[in-house]
Length: 247
Length: 294
Image (cartoon, rainbow over all chains, first blue to last red; front, side, top):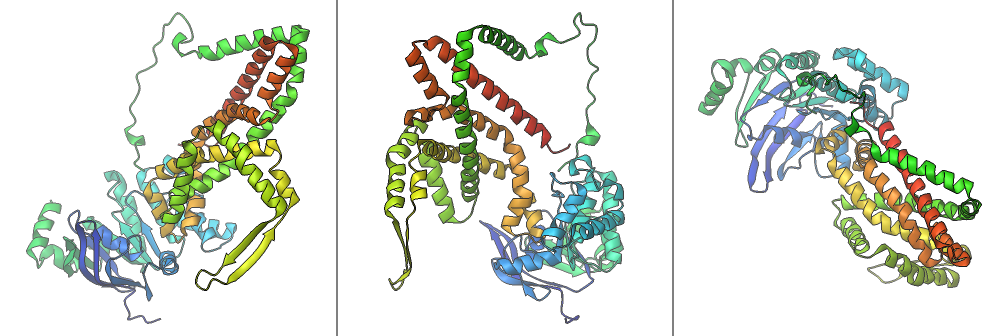
């Protein structure tokens, strides 16, 4: 495997939803081990871009290549990519009919064909890592939002992904639960996980991100480092946006 | 899922100082009346030799009613699941076939469906299997025959000659269309994020349906499934029209032979009531047992 080759390559991607032109020729690449934070006003296409990486949205033109596999309509390719790419959603999307442990073991058993004992061991280890080992037998509805989101992170990690995507992971949380989720993400970033994070959590961006990308109206406006972005953004639009979110 | 637990509203303390220890408006009076009526009916039935003999004689009708109901419902659950999955499928062919099935069946009275199956469809298959049905699979492009066989089986033909089987299959086809819509509604009630989460973990559409969507959908649709089960028990009486000797036909024959319609039909009605109430209780128990812990 070529380590210089970017693990995610997005080339001139366009995406339309009916009349809305959500992505207008986006080109972006992410290196192994990089932590990239995507920011931008709502409707700027950042979640759509993220969802194109694991094929939850199909691109209209251009291409997305993840770990040398093109993310096309082919079901085989998409499933191959998805097994390597974990995603954490704004609404957690835990499976409410399964316990926390079963949520984490299900895909390991069905997709990775691990034994019950092995997948449970992995699940317990990951629950300890995200700080809630005692919740293995609880059902999602019995957990707080922050705990649910940490289970969602553990569920994605159980597949040993090479890339983790986060789609506004703290936006649906009460303020006092945001930190516990960000802490779990920070640990991952420190371990060298490749991460693409859609989030306006500037504290996280400052602490963990190598790169920060500002998007507006379906295009990339600025691609820089967090330090550079906060102290001296190049573009006027970035400036305006930052003045609205940093108060 | 949003967490509302932290903002739970505290309810005012329950009012005390009532004259009665129970709230009279909350007592399920209908159950008490039913139980009293049941006890009264049981007393009458078991003290009168006439009623006792009627109930014993109608017993074999009950057996057939339950047999037809359970088997037809089991088949309807399978037909409904298949048609329901086809209804939510994005494949236009599967969607069209299942929609045709659902719309056609739901537009025809169940009694007419049963008679149609008995007089038209079943004889067609019975004759066909008895004489042999030729199956050929032509190559669409060249016209040459790829596969050819004649399916001939007296056992299969016999299957379509028994009126009990015919009644079961006709009921199952009829109810399958209604259950398909129940399944569809249940699947569509599951938030889209569930499918996305399952697919994102690398599951195929079928795996996601099996492990994530259907287990949740079935819990949601247990009450309507239970209602249809009870309806099926009542509609099994329609098979008396094609001479299935279940409870209704049995009662009709016995009451005609003995010139005692009042006693026979009263007993038949009571027996149906006991069976439907019993099934309702089982369904409620299942709902509670499979509820997702909150």
